[in-house]
Length: 275
Ligand code: ADP
Ligand code: MG
Image (tube, rainbow, N blue to C red; front, side, top):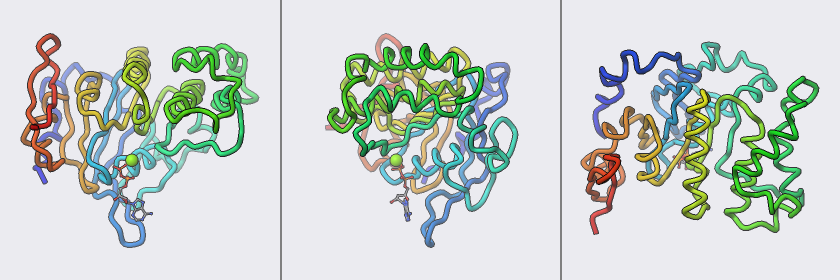
């Protein structure tokens, strides 16, 4: 595996460009289950105002790390802090008002309507003044994810991509300042993939913290402010898209030869498999 040189943030980024403390930080996180090491000594930080993409081959540990950052899964070693407090000290309801999680598996087996599923995103705010915002936030989430026309349909009757958008709408309606999204674009068509990343970017620009697992390296290159690459449960590199997405590193980590060229207009790295 490649050296962890990129883990140290480049000087330009560590200066004034990172004024905000991380909302989420993991230090030396390990997860071992039944003797299998899913994560090993992973450091990770997510800051407000940034889209942080988590990438890596199948089985790299991306979903495991997201689960640990969400507080849904306990680390067996290392520590995780949310807003500077150990994640274990947060009450569940408090956490639910702090971060919203889109799981990779988000199947709804009961015949709830899509509208009812989106409304479930508001559950953490029941009995608080924020309840007054329920209708407005649900309507906004449904519009942003383009599922307005689907709200009366039952979720099992929807296509995979439609279901994924309803699941995302539920997460957006939760209106938590940190979004943890596990492969939100996997089932989506081109326009809806771009929609998801546009939403992620606009939320981050409004001050939210976004961590998003992506397989499409070009989406990560185009939209992420920071990319963390995992492989085999270990951190391989973390930094700007330019720093992380080198042809040599991607070729080595994914076992697929690629070339990386700058986008002719934006300059963002374009990753092309050698064919
Ligand atoms: P990713 O999301 O990067 O594809 P995951 O975090 O889901 O990877 O899983 C990391 C690795 O851990 C995979 O190889 C997966 O098969 C393995 N794994 C996940 N859960 C368990 C478990 N309960 N027991 C053993 N291995 C597991
Ligand atoms: Mg996964």
